Length: 98
Image 1 (cartoon, rainbow, N blue to C red):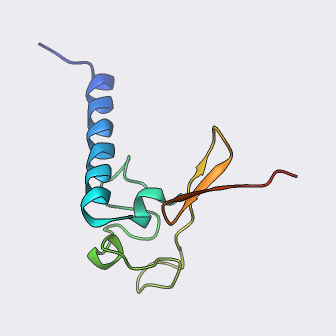
Image 2 (cartoon, rainbow, N blue to C red; image 1 turned 30 degrees about the vertical axis):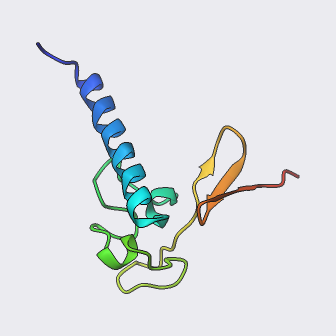
C-alpha cells in the first residue's frame, strides 16, 4: 500500500512532537522544544544557532546565556499565534497588546 508523501510527513512530525513530549516527561523542561529558532521540522536536533544542538543545552543549559559556537543566537520563546501568549520556562505568559 502506497502512502502519500504528505501523509508520511504528517506522521514524521507527529512522531517528533511525541518524542519531545516524552523527553520533557523524562528529563523536565527542554528550552529547545519551545524556542523560536528551532528548525527540527527541517533538520532534526538543529536550530539557527547550531547545526547539531550540544548535549549540554538539551540537558538543561540555560541558553539565554552565551554558549560556545552559538553564533550569538540565544533562546527566544515561540509565540503561540492563536492566543498571543508565549511559553517561557514551561509556563505560559500572556503578552500585552498595545
